[in-house]
Length: 252
Image 1 (tube, helix red, strand yellow):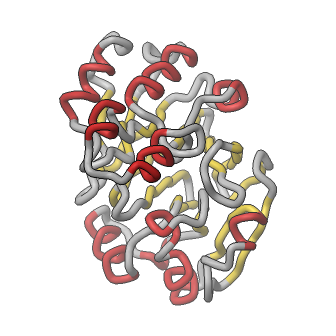
Image 2: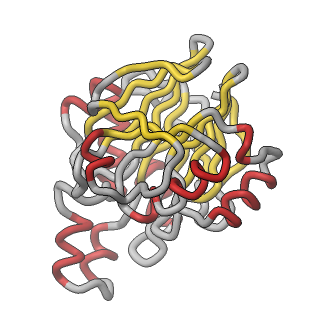
């Protein structure tokens, strides 16, 4: 199993996961043209997708899903709550599940995970194939015991390091938005993400730790690295998911 990103951040998110004969996309927050261009950079085209998994209905994660699905006849998998928002309009086929359901799409086993975020029924994913497991975990405001339990013993992990709390509080966002981003239903800050890694006790076994969904206004690579250095035995497994280019293929 391998994975790659088309881009990660508030301007658009999409992750590709491939195992055997199955290629899945997790979220699509880019236009159809931009999605196609970014997939071509990774040696793929949209007609090779067997499904699109959607975490929640916010535009940076779902704005491109409907058109992509309709043009190429791709099934979309999402929670009942996300579907009820009506923001995945025009999709070829909607397959609804309950958060925390488990199912398979082709060669990939999909475990859905409920997370605290300000959306209708948000979830994240743990994917497995060939004895390897990949955790995808962004867009949550706090670490719950349930989340910790679901992400133990991942071989690779894509994890949100959204903001530095000091930068967020001193930044230009209005007070209401600061409370939203920094609250229990918003996004993980650097220290919260590092604390999750401590609780998972997984840093020695991770082949790759992808630092994702980094705020361009409220975080910096230097600040995230300083926090990571306190919990990682080595920075060698760390990969940075960029807004403009995502990251290339990584083996789980």
